[in-house]
Length: 234
Image 1 (spheres, rainbow, N blue to C red):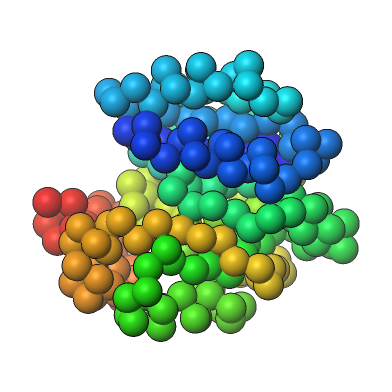
Image 2: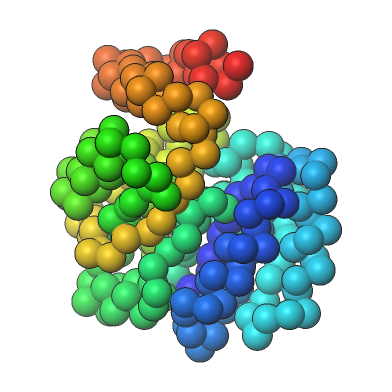
């Protein structure tokens, strides 16, 4: 059974769409729960999630955590009852029958993996960028591609490193690549390009590339976050 874990912060406009999408594109027999982990929303996200709890056949839980995706996802993992964890961003929509595909790969022996990714945008830079998600190299990975991982492996790796306020997805994926096979499923998750629209696609992609280069050159989690605050968050 799969536990879906979704970290949120002020996602009132996306969370209901995501949960409906999950219901329409998966089997209730494969998903034990959706755990939405809120990091301090003030826009009514929690209230929307709680209002949906009676509308679906699977359990929908709303947990409260300290702000920070690594902390939120670890909180969700601790409460999860499924043997497979599926970490999903609130603005990313997995492909039809994603649950069946995940279970099939785990039964074949894959302990972790993700889907290929497409943006909901036709910007040429984003089309070029998303093309690389088909390749099984760790530098082609990102949190928007989602992550499935057995709970046993996640626990053995001590989950997400909470020192990372950003880059937490890539940091965990890098550790998986170091010791285990990582599976790229051939179907596509569709993720929002809203941040690229807000910040400018070329500008944002440049700064994300700089963050990856800084990490490769040995930057600390705090140094990566400081760069993010200076160039992206503001």
